[in-house]
View (spheres, rainbow, N blue to C red):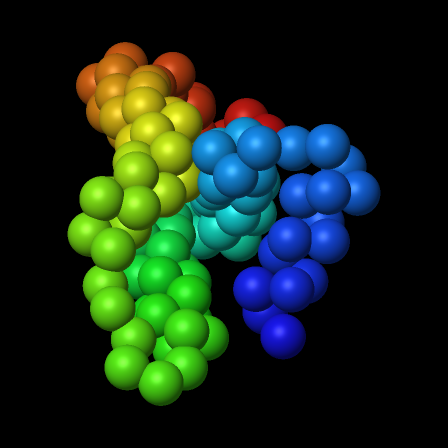
Length: 110
């Protein structure tokens, strides 16, 4: 079922497999980042989701499933490439902003 749905989506939108992994990886990362506001936690959540996706792909093979390590690594790289760069960028920006001096508020003034 899952494999058929994935094939239909790829055909309907005219996407390649790697494009789907790239777009969905970025989209899920942005949703996780918006929910948690923690770049590295969001990346780890996406890694867990990608591992689950690969396990689902493996379970859909039926019979004696065979792990295609090359395809698994390729899918994972495409899924995690943009989110990993985004996590590093967001974490760096957060660290720099934390080092900036904050203006002091005077007592009695609102």
